[in-house]
Length: 232
Image (tube, rainbow, N blue to C red; front, side, top):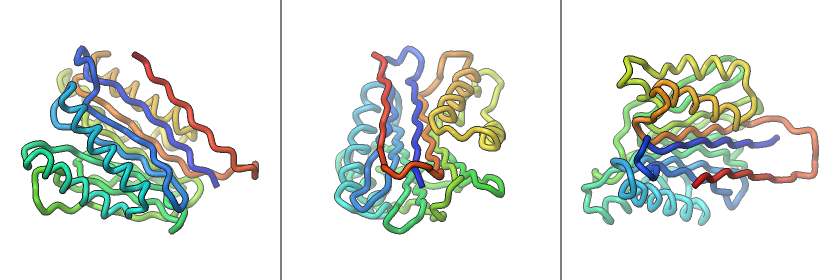
């Protein structure tokens, strides 16, 4: 099998820097995790917060911590660093080869969509953000690591797109894409482009889309590739 990850992000229009952070981390016992963090507010302050949280989560994952422990520690960490006055929302998408499972961890109200052969599901239960509650629990779901499964995560800039223009981001748009699209990066790009379009080309908030695809592969060499585009 093969794990493919596609990421697309954009900052709030005219804000200068995106307050959202996203990181891809290789797990020490095999697999990948995608860390999506939305810092409170926008601009440089939000970026410092989200980057700090994402870096801490990445370090913990690299040290072998389980996802539930990672989510709890970063919540305590942000609470301690900012005295409980600053929040962040976090989504963690994991393909865990050690346990042959997909793990979705959320401290956010932004949904995660799971596409599979018999349709699509949506994880959208209300969960508290991290950093403002001393005792905080993530919502964690496990799914089999099976070819043809797709995970799609967002920050709220995507799901709230269009709200200032009498438009609304519909999850049905993503469901329809999952019926046809298979390339992780193309999926991420198309979803982000749709959200930007709902905001008339001027994003009203920072946006991140992350897509993880589990697929079959024909070659046996196990070549790993990563491609990054970083405009400035």
